[in-house]
Length: 156
Image 1: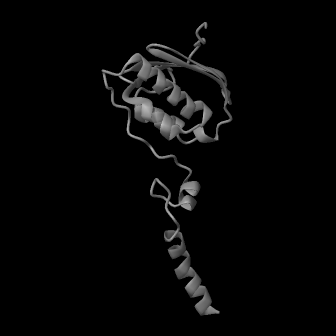
Image 2: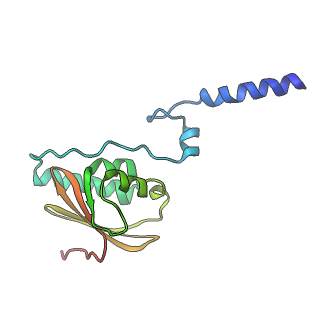
Image 3: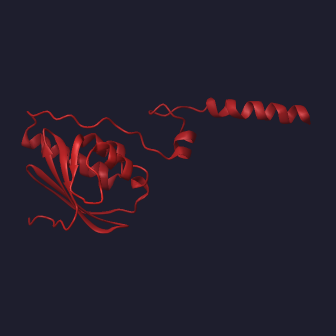
């Protein structure tokens, strides 16, 4: 009886270490338990990015952010020195990540529509915060500014 208990306490930690790793280098068990998305590096501006390329990037951002709720993929489009015009939020990639990443994937989001008019894009969706219109300014293929206070979707 004592030997069974001793062996089980020695083997359990090894079983966790032997769990297969996912693409992020974490076991599925640990990643699920920790519930933390992988923080990507911030977007680096490429000033030769065309309007068409920016439109494609804006659509990819919208897909990741409100349709797939993949915060890691969405944040690949946000610059390090991003300006947030929401008075309750600080500027910068890291403060935005720290606010959104813990809960974004569990949000109940209903996408309504998106728009792009160079150099800006809009996302309109419903969430636990009500109906939201986010406006973003793009520069060099990256999001450099964000507004969400009293924003209106642009006329089509």
